[in-house]
Length: 160
Ligand SMILES: [Cu+2]
Image 1 (tube, rainbow, N blue to C red):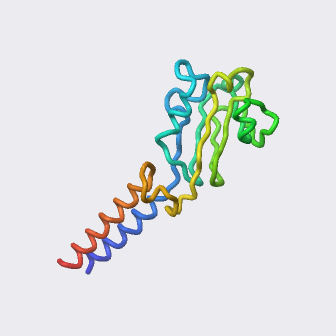
Image 2: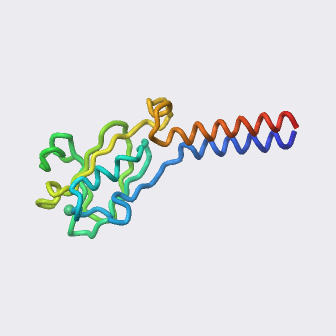
Image 3: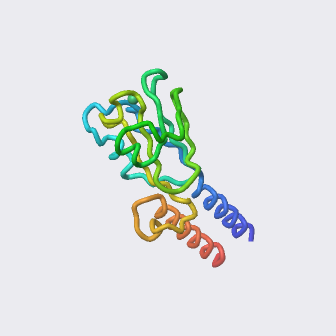
């Protein structure tokens, strides 16, 4: 019986951790600056990631050399600052993703955005009821794997 309780407790902990917020360093060790080789550097960086509400983006940059603006899609496409609704001037800047849908970030320094210092991401609700559950890529398959593993453990515990 003690085994069953232990397994159930582990299950709860695992399920809880499955939705824990993730912190991302934008651009990894390269940080937030003008891409040196590939103008689509930040697009490539975001491509293999799935972002959920409450995840945190850390933009690592030197204060006074770059900044981070969150703005609308037209502003992002045109690299104009006119429709900015969030400005972070101090690096590193931590931005918590508070809503689902597309998020657009650029550097507001002259010429930086058009040189590729811009990031577009899609944010999901984190409840697992998005198409990602049945069609990888994303964080969902690991949750499915975790749940499967837990069921195997419970079955084993009940049989012993
Ligand atoms: Cu910049």
